[in-house]
Image (tube, rainbow, N blue to C red; front, side):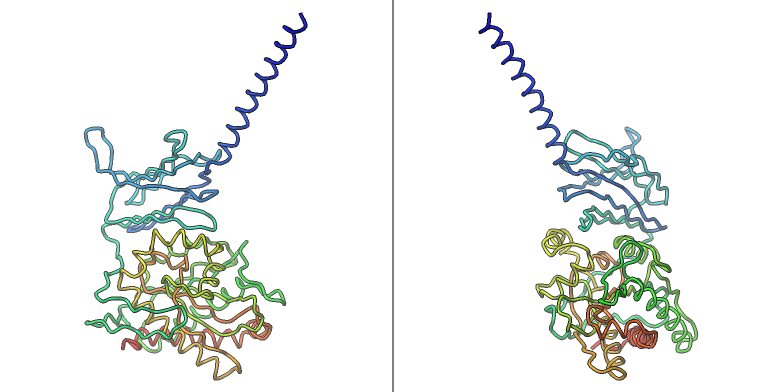
Length: 411
């Protein structure tokens, strides 16, 4: 009796072990899956951006389907996210109805795939690319009336991260006349739960950038009215201490069909002595300092930025906007640095540089990011606390934008 009893106990214990082992393996496999946390959109008449937020990096593929009247299906675009599951509280049906997209739908296509489908009303073009910090997949939909970046007519200049930029000479100048600038979007970096860089005396980047942006809007409007007799529409991406994702800032500029996009930031460095002003445009670079600055502003790592690069590299230098962005950056850098140097000792001009800033990705207009000083430098932080210093920064950026509008720096 005892041997049979022992065998039964062993079988029961083995069954229990296998049961819990299967449960544990299933739990581990489930935990390893990517979770689709949120789907949000930003809409306008001719442009819509859909953002799919994930809890970790994921592989995905996308496909555009033709309209199929036989099964009464509209034209559809879908993204399949591999190794993924839907979050528990995610909204699975998101009405959009903006003239471009009817609805966004999310579903568990199979055990290993989440599919996000966009039902299309109007489509001229689209782009899909990932971003990190947090991980997300961005889908840009352009309607038939959308204004998109022109194709480049000349080879873009080869510029390292720290070399002095020589503005290219296209065969036919692509200078925008003052009256052609209808809308300017100014983007105060960070905000809300994202303070940006913080100085030793606790000054926060988000506070400084918002002050500068408000001053810049007022100063730019006044100077443009004085010079041209009328002023463009000037829009701030945020007007208060509010959190705004990087992808939404670009979406605001695209949806407003802006002619210029200027993002304002304050620099920081592990080296307390680092100082100066520098202006960036969107470009791939191997310069370590430029990569460090972009990674900090993107809230990600250089390695994660390299993963993103493969999807968008072909777009970085394929449009005429890059040449115009360099010209805008050059004008702002020159007037900003020279204006500060006349009033303050020790202000360095660190030049015009290219880097992969997420806030500039897929912006359909000349766009730049300005690092106005180093908040990590005690002297710079002290200056950034004063309205006098901020006004000089504002004057320099204003003059640079006007010089760009006047066609300076074209050759």
